[in-house]
Amino acid sequence: MPVITTIADLKRLHKRRTPKMFYDYAESGSWTEQTFRENTSDFDQIRFKQRVAVDMTNRNTASQMIGQNVAMPVALAPVGLTGMQCADGEIKAARAAEKFGVPFTLSTMSICSIEDVAENTTNPFWFQVYTLKDDDFMKRLFDRARAAKCSAIVITLDLQIMGQRHKDLKNGLSAPPKFTAASIADLATKWGWGIEMLQTRRRFFGNIVGHAQGVTDPSSLASWIAEAFDHALDWDRVAQLMKMWDGPVILKGIMDADDARKAAELGADAIIVSNHGGRQLDGALSSIRALPAIMDAVGDKVEVHLDSGIRSGQDVLKALAMGAKGTYIGRAFVNGLGAMGEKGVTSALEVIHKELDLTMALCGRRDVNTLDKDILLIPQGFEGQWQ
Ligand code: GLV
Image (cartoon, rainbow, N blue to C red; front, side, top):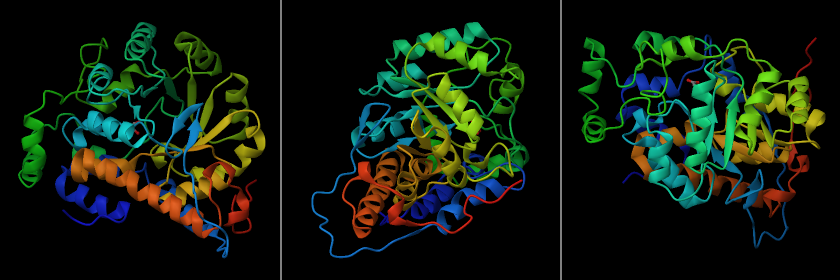
């Protein structure tokens, strides 16, 4: 068993074990990948203030996200094709999350279906939806999520059309993988992954295949997005969807203060400052740089969460100190899953928790619920001066 001390350790193992097309799917941003890179490098620009001779006993990382108790304010983000990183991946990730005491968010583009995850876990999970044209499909999806006792939905607002990720096109991404000379050569070196995959029946988009009509290639994410997603989405439609669900709602993909105000006005339980992990609008600001303006606009009106770029507990601490009430990890848990299945996700959560807890202590603080910017050194002009 390798000694895992960082998310980067898990990432190396993930790359070794998982077919290239799925590893690349997770590790890509759109176009030049500028936003993808800056999501992490901007976190690195923020430093901590070292404090000494401060009592660091009885530390606490437990908190709440949308009123639900969490062992630390770090949820697993919705990630498409998680069940292709490792057989039954969504079930394994959800189990690791529930044992750790953090929320798991199931993507609509998952391999394991809502029902699969509900049957194999005990805690309610969150369910992520896109905004689709087909009202019947949306209603059925909400009914299925209700039947599965999902405790919140996360509506993704920044993916009506898909940002281009070059590697997915070049790799011919599909679930399950189509057999080409390149994919066969790659799969031949990933036999551990292949053996597990042959032992599960969950190899297709479980929430879509057999549920959505008129999808011409159900193995292709890109073709489903092109055919089914609602290009006419506006705030009235968002309000309609929130009413259709009639339960806790988190709106994801907010990068602008006006959009944040609108989301707060609609009564969202939380918003997620997110640029979709740099996978949509390349050239957008990193989410950590966008956070201060959004806190100023709506910090006292709605719970603000942040995703995109978090690879360590130190990143979590920075986001919390800047005002976020919750954070999400996507790639960081997928690295764990691809590396070692459920154990790997647990390991990713342990790494993040330890980094969060120890860094907080070294900054002279004991409770994640009482953090503020005083523990940080934020470079002047961090948010940028844009016209
Ligand atoms: C799906 O949301 C993706 O980013 O691929």
